[in-house]
Image (cartoon, rainbow, N blue to C red):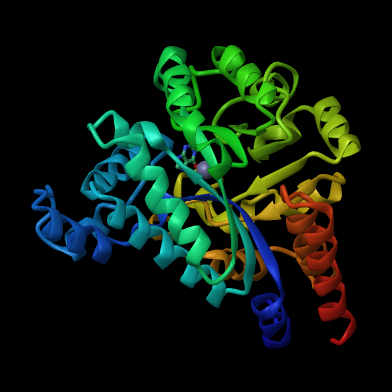
Length: 335
Ligand code: HPA
Ligand code: ZN
């Protein structure tokens, strides 16, 4: 259990969030409000009944409910409202900068135009209280052709995204499946990241690096099963965007006390703390920091390192990055 003074320090420190799926920030109350606004029928009668269904056994059991929740999003204003709610909530947790994932295929497959999705999310990012940029994720359970078509749809909006990622059902959908579309994205100058080593084996982390040439690994907690890969990723300074509450809710670890975050840091890996799908997993950034610091032997030096890692790993222009890092160091110097 961390002491109160460390809790306050962690809560108030400046931080960046690098792993947040905007559709995973859709709170049950907003799902019901949007369902009513849009005349969408939900299979749960009440907010409480929906929340009660958030008892997951693995990634797929979560994804089924997550995609159902996203079905209430139809109009540009819906995407704006969802994104603005997240940005305001993140600001309250002293998140200074967020790199936000969105899943266009979840919406275009339902007939919602790509422009509706991106314009709503992007306008909120421009008007919101914190620095924010967008990473477009491809759904790995769909064929590569669908990802290639999605990239085509994104081209007129190239200036609204900073990079691409890869999410959804990991096992059985290795990074190699998306080699061509990621090569096209890199040629466009987009940053590239991928979920790997959440439920999938360390070999998926290696192929995300070697085949997709990713700059960060999302999750990556299974990396410690491969000592050579661990040493390589640590040496290269490639960050892992770790999501503690997500990992426990999806049974990647049986309880927070069994999470390997400290071992990741001890191995020299540039781990960060993130919320993943905060409306589904029990909390936003500070809830993730508090749950990890409560259950694990993490102290003041870890807090500063995690805050620094979050800005160091961000896709920010050098001057902005240095300014945020200086803000972190000033904050810790006055403690
Ligand atoms: N893993 C894979 N896909 C996802 C996740 C995740 O944690 N969250 C939303 N889509
Ligand atoms: Zn994720």
